[in-house]
Length: 161
Image (tube, rainbow, N blue to C red; front, side, top):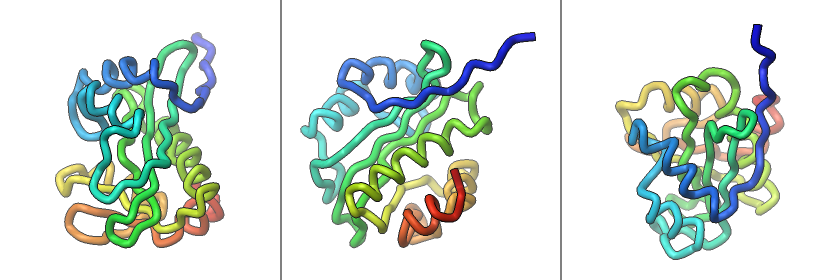
C-alpha cells in the first residue's frame, strides 16, 4: 500500500510558470492560459480588465509534482476589491482538498491586502466549478460571475478550509 504524500503549498516564482502551463495544457479548459499570457500576468504586463498590480500565484505540490495552482489580484472590476484569476487542479487530484487548500491561501492573501469583496468569472457550463465556489461561500453576481461579499467572513471564518 502506498503511503500518501502530503500536499505542499508555496508561492509561485517566475520559473514555475512553464510548469503551470504544462499541467493545464493537457485539458486546456478553464483555469489557465497560454504560457505567454501567464508569464505576462505574473510579470505585471498583462492586466485583466480593471486589475491592479498586486497579484499572487500559489502552487500545490505532491512530492515534487505540481498538481495545481491559483492566481488572484486586486481589482476595481464590478466594485470588487480582488479577483480570483485562475484555479486549476490536475484531474487525478480533484475532490481531494487541493482546490480548497489553494483557495484558503489566496483568501488569506486577499485578507492581508484588505480585499473583502472578491469576484471570479466562471462559465455557466462549468457546473462543477460553480458548485465548488458556492460551497465555499460565493454567490451568483450575474450569469458569468460569482462573488464573495466578504471573503474573510464567508470563507475563512466559516471554517471552510
